Length: 258
Length: 259
Image (tube, rainbow over all chains, first blue to last red; front, side, top):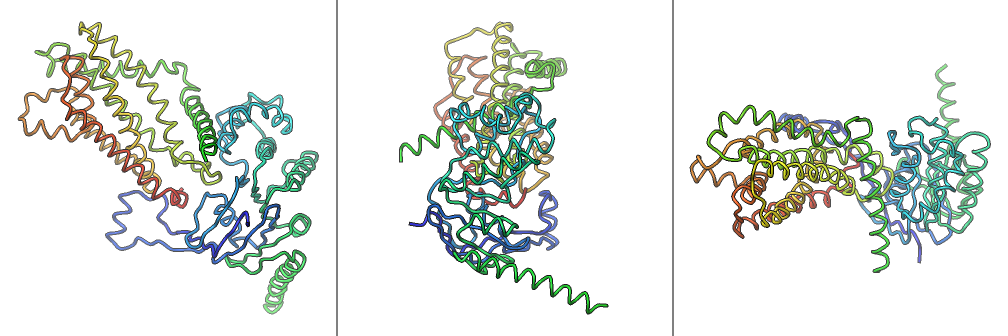
């Protein structure tokens, strides 16, 4: 039985200038007939399935719908059409440092984040020292979060997230954070998790990383599924050719202009 | 299946506790008076009202202070909880757009700190009634019922308002005006006895007034309201929870487009 099964998944965003308007404005625009909502399909008809232990690399240029797809799998969004079946616990590491509270201390934030990620208090009590040690923030435990440097913030976020032992791990470009030594340490830690038999989905712009870690590839372009399969090298080189082609086309255009 | 449910419950309880802690710390962190202010503020409010209104409404009424105070604390609790609830979703948008969490927990945690506030002012209220010479009776225990109904009612209204605030950012202003209107219609500083019975019946459409009236009946007159009155309170609470719950259920995955 596949651990993740996505059937013909399409996700529609609604866009337009309806955000941040008030009720008064909303009613007025309806009266004037100026209320407009545009639709935007972030992903269209994505179909794939993953078995336990699979590592899926999702590639594609900006705006291809990669992050949207990850949000749908983690349950933050629901597909507008199609369905996603997920069997197992999911941990999604998306934009790690957002959502911390500036006015709480490091320790309070650690517990809060742990709780939100679905850990139990007992688990956090057991792991707290380990997290702080890994993040190298032992002397900063009672500092307010806003007093940390941005490097420290991402170190803390990464360390909390790294404790996860989920069935499914979702990574949006967070394979390593911080500077020099910590970058190496966090990269190794992530490798260790990925190799522990977890089913993973990884969005990355680094083709080297994808070919090294993944055994399946999903290539998206402007929301559409171009390729899905286990021919990692084949799809990646096709993708690179496509990128190269785009670049070459631009160059030709530029030359023509002169 | 059962094990799964227990695990989920434990996770959510931990989440809830941590959110309550956060809201509490943020609320009182940088205030010298801290929780002291939550006691002082309604007292000052009461003082102002007493000075202003005693001449007009309280001259031939025994225990006017208690009458005023009862209306005041109930209404303040309603106002503070619902206004506070309004930002439950918008202020936590950064969390629920990145982590899959049950969104109603943000609202529930906000309600806890205002409930604790209310509990404190309620103690002060009881103290004042004693000072005012109102005799304590065993019937006072029944006050739990209207308060319980009000908590549920506030939760429901909070669900509605927090959802509305996601879609319409001026909810706050409109609601402020609404609350002001509601306050004048809740008979906080005047009596309804002088009004015609038909008008008096209209007051029953106001759930907050119903709670206030229940408290006054018990405290000032030592009378227990009718069973129908009890049902009315429960009905308001359930209706508000139901509407709020339905909105959350229906819009749960749409909030994220608007924040």
